[in-house]
Image 1 (cartoon, rainbow, N blue to C red):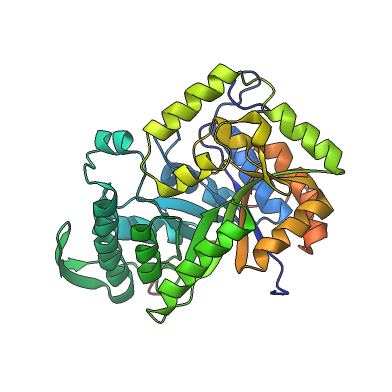
Image 2: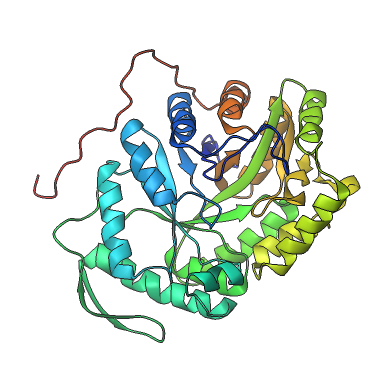
Length: 377
């Protein structure tokens, strides 16, 4: 197992959040002031970065990231890059711009998408595997533009004729790092070919091991080595009992009817292998939510995406996270409800247990990003 401390990222709830799931009680809208508070807190506390989600129920991550990057100092922004939604050339120039605005703090999360109805609304009508074929072509063009500044490409889905990046290049070389989470065979092939960090949602360690072993083997067959990350919620308290009480409070306003309706909708709306794996972990049953020691699937009763949380004292959660670290996971992308308070709780309780240095808040400090140098400099 690596002795290098885990890198913990946090989450920006660009669709809003609150203290309970599946209810408007205590809901906090995703206004820029609240998101700014969370980003600044994560920056001050020592989180390595923040993930911004994507979807029709979220504020656009690129807009939010552009607004918040100048108001933070060290925080990295993991933003969704959506093949099929824009051309590779435009995406390359946007990536360069935000990497420069943030002074090299942009990370890109490749999201092909797993909800056909939503995708159709944006004009993406390809089936599951064809979307990944398009993603492969998109990333081929995008990477060549950032690496070489120019590319000619003719594929089944995309074409670039004498494409040029332009006069500016990115701060990070050869380009901002590419992250990706996809559990299907087609998705894993794309990861093995193109990305730097492969992400998995929180599943029991044995299932995560199987998946990472597959990805590792596919990347090795191409002569590539990837980094690995885990996306999971955290419910950390001073004792295990307090943490389980907090988990149960989070779903205390959910009726059986609400759960059944949400489960039906999520299954009907997706062709994502990863999403279906999350739903199968608990099957919508309240009495089967601890699917592995301290791994609780209650969030997934009503929420798309990652539906699991590690629950316990700081020592317990640290022990469980080290189990994933032993499998090769180096980064944890965590979240908790509500995100502002839970960022402090995780930093104050869990960081010391993991050996992560916590930066002290310095009143009056200016947390604006450093100026961006132009390419000619």
